[in-house]
Length: 214
Length: 222
Image 1: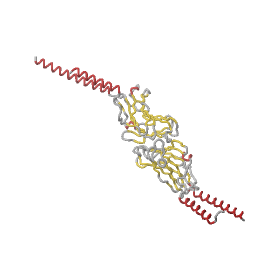
Image 2: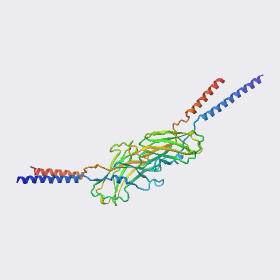
Image 3: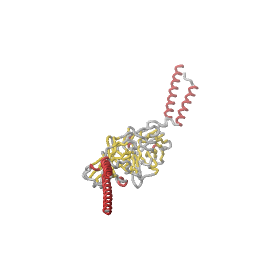
Image 4: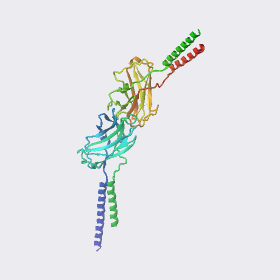
């Protein structure tokens, strides 16, 4: 009789352990789903950036600095007036971003005037996903994010670029722009809202389950 | 008799006035400045940016009312003291025999401080102005005397009939402010003499005035 009770106890304990392991595995999987995978280009990848497009033929871009966490660019326009823009990036990117749903990069305006910036990604079907365009003041830095789920395919990524624009000449006859592209993300929202909701729900349900069992 | 004396006095006054005018004119320092079109024709000195030689590239980016804005930059591998220059074209020459100084107005349009120098070559010697360190600007604001200035060269000892080139140089210890390898500046025609009556002509003017006073005292005008 005692043996039977002992065996039943062992069975119950094993069942409880197994259930805990199963719950842990479930939470781990849910956490993985909830985590928004963000990709950012490294310094060596940013160093491959070059000017790939301009609104007029008189825009030029050069790399003038390599700080510890990014690259400093110079973009200038010669004898232009009115709205002008330039795209600086890698049009033979070939990245496999299947595992990522967000592309983020930080931009700092080094210039003495405010300029407009945006970030874009293109897939092999020529579909383009872009961040919002923001005006950055002198010495202002901002993280730009692109939702990669807007693309048809994330492998391979065809092109990645930054668009800089302004109404030339800016004050002081300015047609010259200095800016930094950083790979250090700083305060990127690594868990965006939909993912966070799943995460909270899974935590709550596990709590309820645990309470019920006790 | 009285009538003749009156006319003589008038004539004497006219002569004195003419003398004083001539003295004043010679007392005024004549200066020369590159004209708007000459500024816009300035060209980069050297082959331009290169990862091997660390040369500077200089580009005209915009015309302004009395001059032009320029950009001089270096690539990321340029460090330490560096200079970039723009210069009058190869076929340019000037005869400045009737001038005593060269003056050119310059504005630092960049957000970082940069140093500027003007140079003149007469075929044998290069004459440099004093180097101006001009502070940076934000949003095109100019603080007179801080973000702009006049590059001045006394051409008294220059072979003024054979000016072969004029050069403007920008320099800094790269990277300026730990990141900057790009200088933006504006060159303009100089309209006002920064040194209107320099000491030797000033002394001439003063002497002429004293001489006039003495003459008038000796021969009072009736």
